[in-house]
Image 1 (cartoon, rainbow, N blue to C red):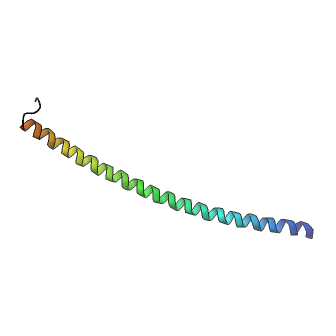
Image 2: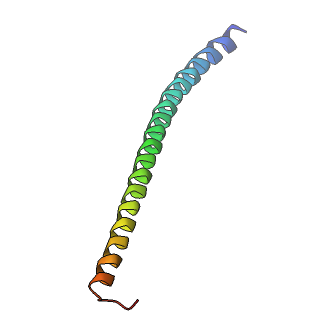
Image 3: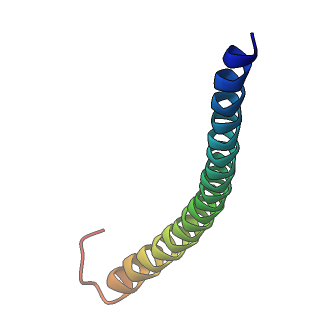
Length: 73
């Protein structure tokens, strides 16, 4: 029985070490994913703001064109 324990224990320790490393790697990946989500939210918010400004500019440009009689109606 001692021989089996001598073989199994080092294998289990190696597996535990590798699992610990994998957990650390997954934690890093999780943190990176969370940061990417936050950045995507910021990008989306910025795009919404830019679309609002473009809509405003479009409305103002339409009004200018009508006042200068550059378009019909």
